[in-house]
Image 1 (cartoon, rainbow, N blue to C red):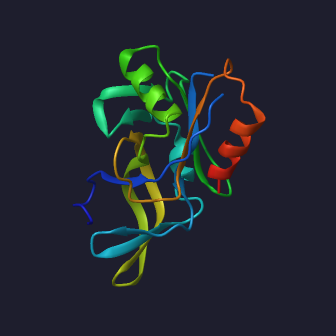
Image 2 (cartoon, rainbow, N blue to C red):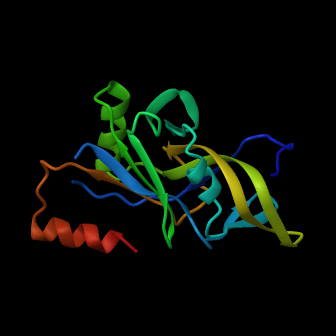
Image 3 (cartoon, rainbow, N blue to C red):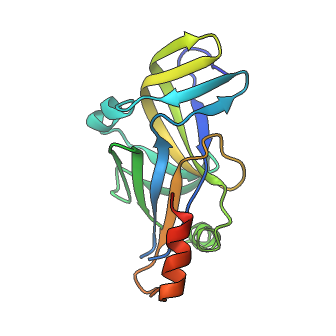
Length: 178
């Protein structure tokens, strides 16, 4: 589903969780992972977010792409974003609000569906009529997704410094990380 020029597109991704501060962290997008978007498959090329991150706009962290459900933002320093060899890594400080407590509780129970991101396409390629590669995008927001993500390879982890894991818990946690 491609939007009109300049419209914001959204992509959702799968999740992993781990416990350790009042933070969520993981990957909002993973490079090279294919996702089925309507009638085509889509991948994200390494470096697709580089120009956005260099420009340093105010990017939001939301729940389900809803701007009334704000968790963090880059302008305040409560959201940190960086590209690495795997994808778009994020770390966000969970607010001590009802929304923040609810999201953290769902993350700790491994009940969230994944991560997502909203973007505008700057550069794309269509190597085949049913294959799209995102080469450069303007990132608008990332979102915690409560239900069904499009990209299954993204990750999210709940971290609380006060939570000490037993060896059995650590082993179960490590078994969930791919």
